[in-house]
Image 1 (tube, rainbow, N blue to C red):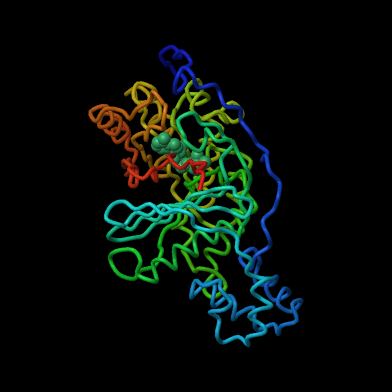
Image 2 (cartoon, rainbow, N blue to C red):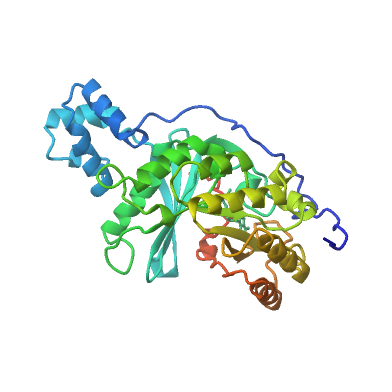
Amino acid sequence: MKTPLAQPVVRPSDETPAIPLQMAPKRRGKPPRHFADLTPEERVASVVEAGEPAFRATQLATHYFTHYTSDPAKMTDLPAKSRDALATTMFPELMRPTRKLEADGGTTVKTLWHLFDEAKVESVLMRYPQRTTLCVSSQAGCGMACPFCATGQLGLTRNLSTAEILEQVRAAFRSLAEGEIPGGVTRLNNLVFMGMGEPLANYKAVIETVRTLVAPQPEGFGMSARNITVSTVGLVPAMQKLTKEGIPVTLALSLHAPDDDLRSELVPINTRWSVDETLDTARNYFEVTGRRVSIEYALIKDMNDHAWRADLLGEKLNARGRGWVHVNPIPLNPTPGSIWTASDRDVEDEFVARLRGHGIPTTIRDTRGSDIDGACGQLAAEEDDE
Ligand code: SAH
């Protein structure tokens, strides 16, 4: 396939050095073990070990997964002495919300969390007329070094534990159940692993989280797998593993360029797994799970928004069959200090029209929360001096 000459290497600003790819975390300290880290069998074993009858495991799970409480003081159907014992062994405090920012009349809420070791992560809750979505973090920082992404500039601090991810979810369910978000009491329907971190680089904790999200109440949150989206830069071996899990979550692939030259700039892991390998793996995910894959494509002015790139993307997707994929272009949310900006509206329209011309379902993703730095790729927990 003929493509124009590769562009010169462009970084978000001249002062911005290339960030190294980082597969292993800087910190290895583990958060305390929490009830939400455990499988249903492990919960029983743990309460028995704490000297409690086995049925307490179901009582605790009911409190946690259907009343969204992790405070044993509020579990008034338990004897007082059991509450005290279980509080320390099963429900250590894992994280504190230190700041909440609201936008869209309070229907978008970003929460900044401080973890036990003062690592910081963020989650964003977005209520729409027909659904409510939570965007969770799976790592503190990220090692994937994508130059246009705010989290990518931080490097990886550490992986989150299963319970640290599930606590973000519980807090969202609770806030919705208590009517804190305008529009009345509601439930969380959608969850996207599009906050800080590369979920497939923290595979074990993420897959355990997914299992608990989809387990029926009271064993888990009873969410539907198809309403859970795991977004990845394209870690091919982990994508292959996810394909075999038998849990039909939606897979989103952050492609951002259809050609290796540019993609290796924008998504450095592309130097390890090429566009073609990554797309083949995504196509196989559809083949095995029946779930249509989402291709994420941040439109960056004069970088990756050319009509020929839309055509090349359309051709590469169609070369792998029809009906297996849709594309989500996202106008770039510029990160501080970056010279990159979002594509012009007419360029964006042309990009979308070209893809649709190839028969590819294409929808522009909204950038809710951009005014509170709560939109795609803007999450970069600040070092504050409180
Ligand atoms: N590491 C995962 C998930 C986190 S980012 C991944 O890369 O897929 C979620 C989505 O936001 C990804 O598609 C990512 O490429 C995109 N994104 C990152 N920075 C962005 C920015 N500044 N503007 C628009 N989208 C961005």
